[in-house]
Amino acid sequence: METLNLGAPLNYISSEGKTYKIVLNKLNKDSTVNSTSNTDAGEIQKINLNSGTGYLTVVKNDLVNLDFMLGDVVIIIIGDLPKEEVIKIANSIK
Image (cartoon, rainbow, N blue to C red; front, side, top):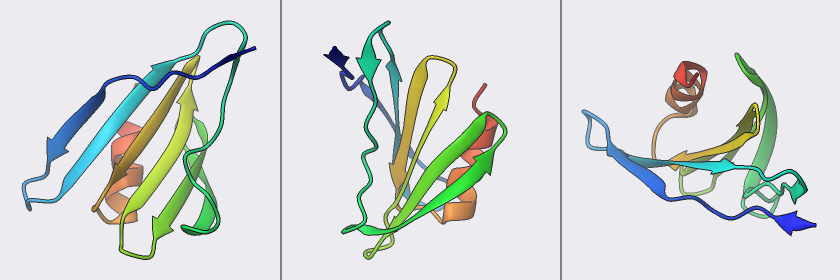
């Protein structure tokens, strides 16, 4: 089985000066997927997005991580934005 290769991150700065990045990873036919979140980092929340289920972690230093899939693409959004903003960004990706 092939494992997921991390794609190039898209780095952003919000109008409030908060930084975040979005990583898009296209899966190969026999790829396996692992979340970048872990329970040691913070509480993992299963959330409903327009594209399906996402897994959101708010790390102790207010860093937010959201993993979800859109078709055969794994999308990771990570940054120092409020979780509501990260969910809004995720729901805007088509």
